[in-house]
Image 1 (cartoon, rainbow, N blue to C red):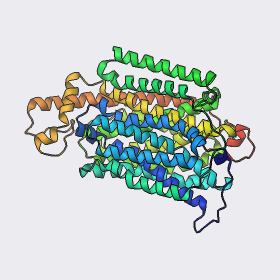
Image 2: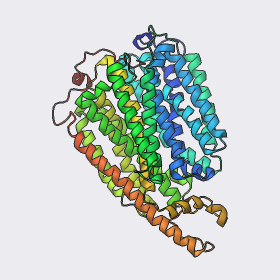
Image 3: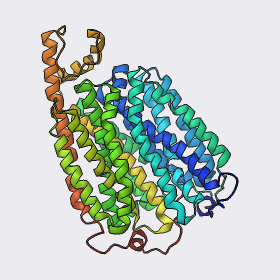
Image 4: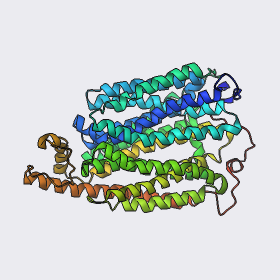
Length: 529
């Protein structure tokens, strides 16, 4: 492919070298996609209240976005091969901007969810092409520098998202959590159109249509079954049918990709490698742990403690800061000691930290929660990127792009299913009476003509005693749900800790990624296909 094998452009062209123009362009585009994920997380409770939706219905706002990302990501390489990386990258940004605009004007929950699918699909196309553009523009000896600068955006976006989302929600501007993407996205599209060079591919691959169809059916069915399980019961007919169709779809997808597809979307044979498999698994757990905190904690802070969206965002900020500081440090240590000690350190902290969060109570001090989230950020920063790099370490250079696509796609799918599963676990402790009551509680600010009331707060004097009693029951049952959800994550963290101990690294000899892969010092193929 011409766009992936092209040599870096000369760095002395024009007033601003081409490589820096590419970096600026990619930062604007990918920053927008990452920012949107964390902005919506903080506004989740407000969106539930605005549309009068249940927890299981409204969690689709997050889940379908991540699922659409997971569908778009494996298609990115094929589309870039077929239509040129510049054109596909700009198209992805355009779809994301259009989806953002439609989200902002959505009159009901289900139209919002539909717009989120468009948003996620566009982001899924653009995101994996960003690093590919950087690798094609920077020489080999400067690619670390490029990803370092790019990493600043990856850290700033998750940190600003909760703050920005909280401020907009608290000022009754929740639709602007989507509208804000429009000017940023249009600027990113303009820069990409003007600055990126068009590199046509020298091949026209065929789309694995059958694999795409059965994969989407399998993933969507599993996600749907997970989202309705708490409402209808795990043994109900719709849930059993959903899981059955999903299982058949995923098995069929694996068979198609492994035995029939001439150019499969995802190279599943990579899982035959022990290091790739182990690192992928612990990476899935780290993603689940990260999203578990982002999904569960705002609900606890806003629904149970009665805090505003902005206050919830500020409380979550220490986790993002700690993760941003730890990630580059872990990357430097990885080159020296390998993944094992870093993974063991990170998941040890994560396991202890998750167990502590499982003991959370209605009156747990906010300062203690912020400290726990800071520690969680250290754990996540030590594990997420480390497991990604480790999984790629045994992969030969020509297959790096496919391996990266597989990892990113599967992580996004795990993230979507994880949110649905945690929502199910959280709702499973609520009795039908309390589920109805919590829906009614969304209108409580209008009933008492005051600020938002958390179900674990003391009830105002004007609320009848019967309602106050229901609030106490809802608080007790909800706290039990949070304990159960974090306990599930704790068990997975322990499993990842054990499996991570079998990864390479100190105290055994560690010679770095290229030695582990048995490669020569050739430039990595990172773009497209």
